[in-house]
Image (cartoon, rainbow, N blue to C red; front, side, top):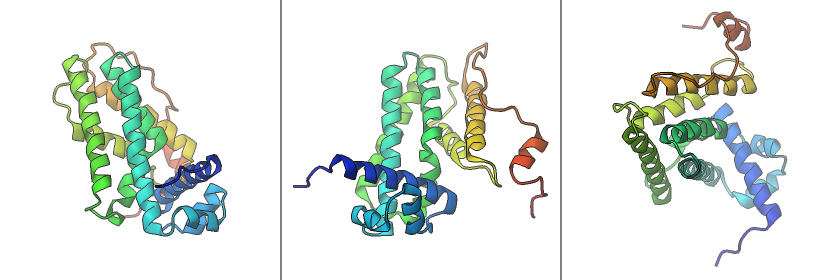
Length: 217
C-alpha cells in the first residue's frame, strides 16, 4: 500500500510539477532537470526522489495538466449557473493554468499506449463536450461550434507568442483574445463582456516581442 505524502513532500511535488510545466513550455521537452530544480527552488536530489527520470517527470506533468483541466471544467459547471459563462470561465482558467501549452509540447515524448493518460484525456474530452452541448442547448453558443474548435482555440491561446514578449503581457493578451473569440462564438445579440488586457497597436506588439525586427523567411 502506498503511503500518502507528507505536507512538505506534497508541496515539493507541486513546486516541481509547476516548474517543470513552465520549463517544458519555454524550452521544450529537452529542458534540463537542473533547470527544473532551479525554477522549483529545490535541490536536484529532491527532484530525483520524486521523479527518478525525465520520462516519469514528463508523464506526471501531462497527467497533472489533464487533471487540472478536468477539475476546472467540473467547477465551472457546478458554480456557474449560465452554460456559456461556464465555458468562458473554463477557457480563462485553462489559459492561466497553461495546461493546453504544456500538453502539446510533450505529446511526442509520451507513449501513446499509456492507458491512464488516455483515460484522463478522454474524460477531459467528455467534460468539454458537456460544456459545449449544454451551452448550445441553452441557445447561447452557436450550434456549429465543436469540441475540436474550442479545444484548438484554447491550445492556440495558451501557446506563448514568438519573440521576447514578457510573460505577464503574453497572458494578458491571451485573455483579451479569448474574450474576442468567445464573443464570436456567442449567439448573444449584444456583446457586453469588457475586453481585458492592453489594446496594443502592431508597432507596440513588435516592440514588446524584441525590437521590431523583420521576421526571418
